Length: 130
Image 1 (tube, rainbow, N blue to C red):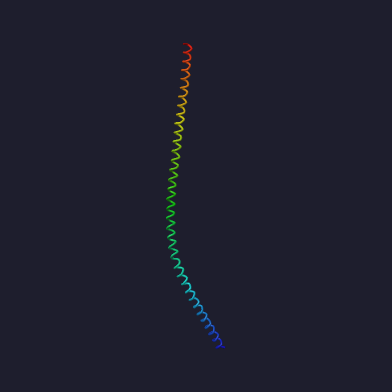
Image 2 (cartoon, rainbow, N blue to C red):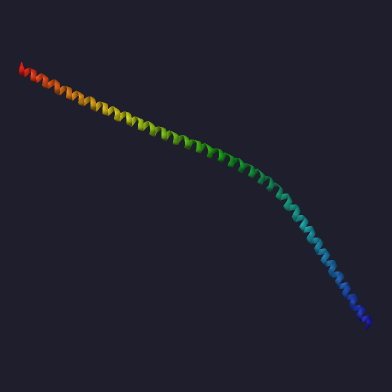
């Protein structure tokens, strides 16, 4: 019985060693595949990272240009606002000048009418009395 027991233990140890060797071989194969995957990933990732850096630089340039254009648009809108205010002031001044000219013309017309009436009355009254 003792030899049977030692025989079973020997068979179990041999089976464990065979399984262990098989696992080590599979592990070695998996490690080899993982190394190849890492090399492939690294070689394909380098150009991608370089392209990403160029894209980020281009994006930075675009945002800088957009910032410059935005500032120019703000300046332009401020200038347009100033021009609008100036046009309003000029319009108010022209309106004041126009109304002032209309008042003067109306006063002059009224004065001419009054003078003509007085002149005509005096002419007619002199011609009746003469």
